[in-house]
Length: 234
Image (cartoon, rainbow, N blue to C red; front, side, top):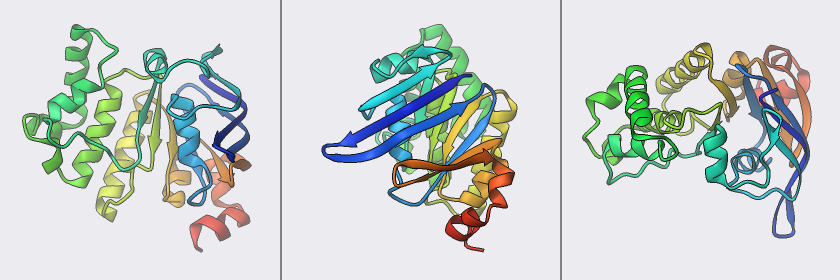
């Protein structure tokens, strides 16, 4: 098991955002997390990556407890997050944005990895000297995914990769997610487009008010009446 979460809870002050979460992600899997706005999806990713503190429970990466380690140590160990809303450094160049993702790597490793990122996202190489803020929404999403890949993660945490994108760009981003999975990248993805997320996921979890209420193969949850009524709008 690559990522193993047991009985994880997290609070914002007196408000409990996560309650006893159990999640498993095996190496090479694409696991989706779906749920309504405010269910705690982003909080769970932030807790895994160390941005949000856990109140209780355990987070293990390849059997090693990481729940009390700093976010920078977790990046070194192989956890890399693509944040919601893209969050590029607009005044900086595309290449400088990418290089920020390699802060845990040597110069030689960074040079090798950035060429791999450019191979995957040719538009970033074409625009490597432009300011990141002038890129389109889809290109900025590619940039933050590339930035996360610069850390050579064991698991990629994707937070709402399709948010705010036109339908054609949404399909392009999902194609990229599929390509990453096919190349062996393990992905744990939060996504507002529940249908597309469940369609491509090996397994999925449904989160409601901070608790996992359903889990199973993505295609199986697509056929679940409760999921259809609550999230698919059909």
